Each structure stands twice: as C-alpha cells, then as structure tokens.
Image (tube, rainbow, N blue to C red; front, side):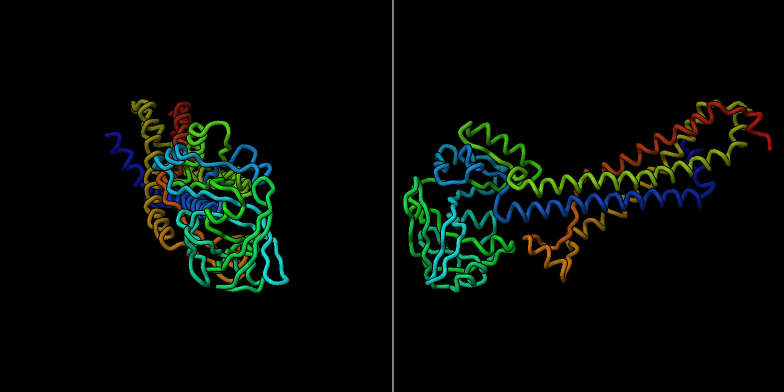
Length: 404
C-alpha cells in the first residue's frame, strides 16, 4: 500500500519527476565517464612507461639503485628464479646487465647505455621486436647488437656495419669488443633513442667479464593493481641482501603525477556532486512545500506522522534510484565503446606525447567498482537529503498547514 502511494505521488507531477531523474542520470553519466577516463588514461600511461623498459617490479643487489655500478651486480640463484616462475601473477622475468659504455665507428664516438638481456624474455615484457625499423631481431646465441635509431644516425652506421664498444667491466677490468649491427630500433623516448644498445645477455657478461652476473631483474605482472602485493611477496622470498622496487619507486615522477591528478579528480567530483546535491535538495524542498496543505490534511484525518515521513523518504530514494539506474544504463555502452575504440589524438599533441614515449591515446576503464561507487555516492546523498522532509513533517502543525 505504501509503495503504491509512493509510486502514485511520483507521477502526479511527472514533469518534475522526469526532470529530476534526468539531472541525476546525467550527473552519474558525467561522474562515471570522468572516473573511467581518468583510470583508463592512467592505466595506459603506466603500461607505456612500465612496459617500455622498467617493468612493474625490479630486483637489484642492495645498494645498486643508489650507486649503479657493476660492482653492485649480483648472481640470480636458480632457487630464486624458480620461486619467481612459480608465481602465477608474474608474466615475465627479464634478467639484465646494464652499464654505460662508449660506442665507436671510425672517428666518431658516443656514450651509450649497453643493455645485456635475454632476447626472448625482453620481447615478452617490452615488445622490443615490434620497434625494429631495419634489419632483424637478435638471438641469444649470437654476439650481435640492436642499436637505437638516434644513436645509429650519430655514429653514421646501418645494418651489417660493425661498431666497437669499450668501457669498464666488472671489478674495474678493461672491456672492449667489436659487434655487428643486426637491427636498428626506434624508441619513442628521445633520450632512449639516442643512447640505447641491446646485446644478448651471455655476450654482455663475457664482454664485461661478469659471468652470470646481473644488475637487475625486471618483472611483468598480470594486474597492475597487485604491484605492491607482489613486491612484498618477492621481498619475503628473497631476503635482505636484495632490494625490491615497485615501479612507483623506480619512476617517482609518474607516480606523483598520477597522485596529483587523482587529487584534482576528487575536487572536480566534489563540485559535481555538490551541484547534484543542491538540485536534489531543491526538488525535495519544492515537493515538500507545495504539498504542505496535503500533509496537514492527512495528519488532521488521522495519518501518523511516521507513516507520512516514510512515504516522503521513499519518494526521494525511489526517484534517486531510477535516476542512478538510468545514468548507469546511459554510461555503460559509452564506456564500453570508448574502451574498444579509444579517443586517439593526432597532430602536434600526438607528437608531444610521443616525445615522452607515450601514446596519444585516451581509453576508458570498465571497472565495475567505478559504477558501484558513483551510484552509492548519489544514493547516499539522497538518503541524507531525505532527512529534510522527515524533519519538516515532525514539526508540522496541521492547522497552520491547512491555512491558505
């Protein structure tokens, strides 16, 4: 009976009800879109930055990150490697031996970062093979290099040419070697594109007189949300002699940028929900004021105030519920579409993004928690606003209410 009264009261003034529902629906739509865009862009940013080189988690010898020298390298024990492989949340384990060397061709010499890595594992984490623009991908059983496009131009070399690498090896020994260029790669980051040389891991260890030694192990995972948990799990396994660093510590600038943008999102969301709250409160205020005579009459003929309060509260919650439901139904197909076909910018904006190694891509994130959170916030606001008519009815004098 009460539900029937609530339903009929809502549609006595259908225009007001529909306008209120529409305002709530569009508010939910904008809030969901804003949050899903933010999460989607951040996830894509993390994927670009982390998947481009560093990995989601890195393992080093303790002290290596503060002083990145070969003497702070380590040997990856077979037991530790097996334990990492048994973790089903880990999708890639990439051992690397990295150091700065000089690359020379003829009279031209340039400083570069030599990255000794497992060819197959590296490609699994960073898709290095897809960055080839000339030549072919290297293999683990050969001593050939992949050289970044910018560095190749500076040295004036191409595929099949030979470059000389020389530098300081493990424990200060002199390191020098000649290597044939098997492929040229294009790296979107200008700094990386001007300085990177990839060499198979075993060849790098031999070149640097650092047999079986590594400077880092980069790890790929299936779900970025589990980064901290996986890092803690690895710490518990490997002990105190190593340092385990999630990407937030490896690339603090990106992590801080995401935190700052997250804070701005809460400010914008607060403003949006403040507007929703005032709109909803205005509707409740009008509904209460224009029915003052009706309320007075109902109380005068014997209706309990508690029952009348329940009806009014039900009207507020029901109209909000339908508004939220409509907002979700409007936003879901749009968010799904923009996830499959994200907004891609071109022109100068795309070039600016590419200079930092990012795609100018703005996808959405279809996370059920986004829809649930936004819906609960609006419903919670409705419950709070629904307290006003209860307070109004509680202090209502039926005689004064029925006066014209």
